[in-house]
Image (cartoon, rainbow over all chains, first blue to last red; front, side, top):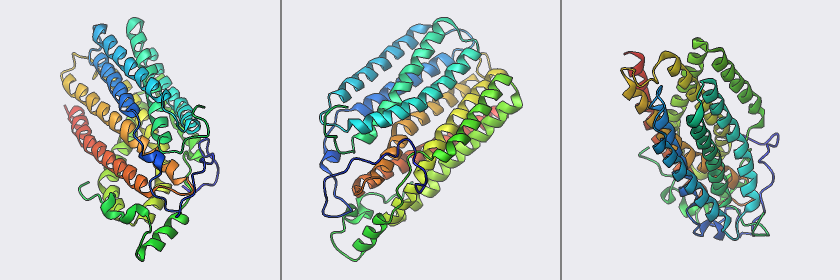
Amino acid sequence: MSTTRPSPLDAPMPSQPPSPSPLSQPAEHTARRLPPVAELAVASMSVVIVAGIYQAAHLPTPPPLGPAEGLLAGAAALLVAALVLVARITPFAWRVFFRVGGWALLAYVVISGMLEFVFVFDHTKGAALVVLTLSLVVFALDIPLLLAFSVARYQPPGPTSRR
Amino acid sequence: MTDLTVGPSSVPGALAPSSGEAAPAIEHGLSARPVPQIVPVRALPVVAVVLAGLVAAVVSNRLWALDFFHVTGGALWTAIDLFVGFVVGPILGRLSVPARVEFSARFMPKMVLLMPTLVIVTLTAGWQLARHEGFVLSSYSHHGWVVASMVVVGVMAVVAIGLLEPANLAVLFELRKPQPDGALIAKLMRRFVYAAGVTGAMQVATLVIMTRLATT
């Protein structure tokens, strides 16, 4: 879509070093190796989805929550590992990272809110609701992290290494 | 999906106009490219209306409304996945790089809003519908098929959110740069189209499961 009205993410991109041609060669920052943040985030999201399917497959009886809690703990650990790894990247396009991550977080808070609303509306209660809610929290953090990292990794690092 | 030539073989010099007559054309194509909008702001009210309608359908417990959202959303989701994966993708792979870039700049922003909306509408309405009809109960005679549909949706979610959406956004941001990296765009678009093909194939499995459930 041609730009006629700016969207929240449409702020100008950071300028790049001059290139001999408008059709640039791969920039240095796009070729460097980065830690497996995206892989960890996808793994975390996958584990959360497995936990959700496990719980849904047992309805209407409450499933044994041990496996679901174990999966949730694993997903949270993967998410924390991804966050630690991304925080240690220097230099990095933090401005782009936080801009994309912020708006993606807003979007996925809305989506997770819809799902939480359905759980509560369906009278899900107690420990099962807690596990499902925490799973949604992990899910709603995984995706913004994944999207923000996937965009920022190809952007030129900002003037400072942190936000 | 078998004839994707987005890679280096079809991108001479990966957009680098080092030699030949094609270079000026490619250069012109990129210099004249539309600057993509990441989120189509004008479509946000439509999304809000659709989500409000979904909430109303859930709260009202009307089967017709839930069925409408599930069938309409699911049909669009399935059709778009199949069309992009098996029709648009191979065509895109044969286009010139400037044409591919221009198409992406106009096409991908729409997908940023459209697909997540269709997914949340289809899944939420489908879950409520299945709950009302008793399909989610483990005592249901075809419960295995229902669980299979959850697994298929889970795999599609991982592919779409883990591969397709990040590639989509990264291409859009790359296209906003004064000097986009052609090789990177080609690589990301190849990932986008392959991921769309995988979700398209998974949609075939969804069609099998859903038609099976609807007729037994």
